[in-house]
Image (cartoon, rainbow, N blue to C red; front, top):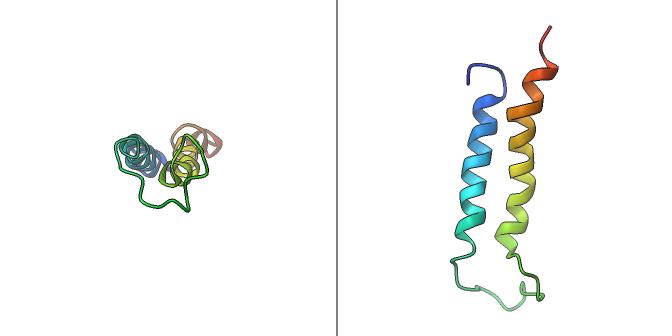
Length: 66
């Protein structure tokens, strides 16, 4: 976790990954957001943050090595 980007990457993966899983347990909040999709709005919005976390954790540190 001492390399640049590892800590924020781990944070994004854990927080938004947990949010993605918890959204399966929540009751539907609004009929306007339900378009027949299997994923809820919170899950759809969590996916980019999870991807960004993987980029920071796995790819970013390797590009900055001199």
